[in-house]
Image 1 (spheres, helix red, strand yellow):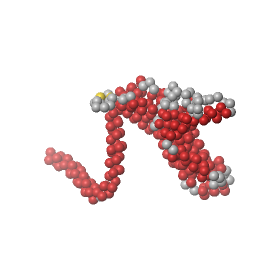
Image 2 (image 1 turned 90 degrees about the vertical axis):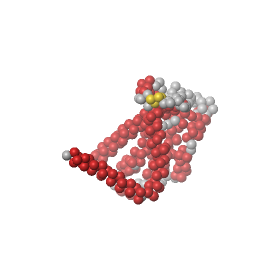
Image 3 (image 1 turned 45 degrees about the vertical axis):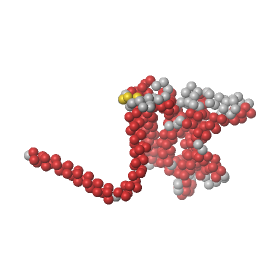
Image 4 (image 1 turned 120 degrees about the vertical axis):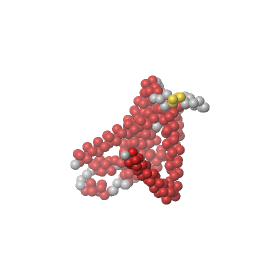
Length: 320
């Protein structure tokens, strides 16, 4: 009986060994193919997987940098950030406010402009396309510096123009609400070029016969927009919502240069908090905050997907 058991246990091992040898022979047979695709996987492992694993280890440790060893602290970095960090709560609220305001208004504005640029009857479409393409090819750092000069309370062009019509200077960068408005305008202008470009490409891919058929059936422009344009743009809209969410949560350079998170931390973002932790040699907490931001992105993206799918399902049922 023992011999039978030994024979039985040896069969799976032999089977696995045979499968491995067959797999290795198949890989050797296609070695040239694997050689050509290997650079991608090497780069992905070196610059993707390894930094992520090392960052996760760092987030569970305390390390002041330099040659000093890491000290394992477990989840203390995460707990400390969520319970006792003096600025993270404010940074989270500011980031969510920017996300909740800029995301819908920015995409709506870009879609409206793209529809106008896609209209055959619009004159000077080429000029408008150049104007709204400029933010796409302009450095965000340069844009932030230019905006800070335009919005300067004493010497900015905006206040100079307001003074011409008798309006007193507005502290665009030194008071809470004007600073938030300034950041919003900056991000709208910077993101409009990319969003308009993507929407315009998607609009041009829609078959014109759909609009012609709707016009024959008596549909006006508004009905065609909501019954044809918006449904056909769903995949693009989903992509843009997710990418815009990731971009806004990772916002740093533009706000840093424009307001430096002020005044009174009213434009202070989560990414700015992470960078400040790293600059203070609190690398473990900075890495932990980076993973927390990733978790926030995943949760928000999941909620967005569920809401959009439920909206599409309800709309489809109503049409049915």
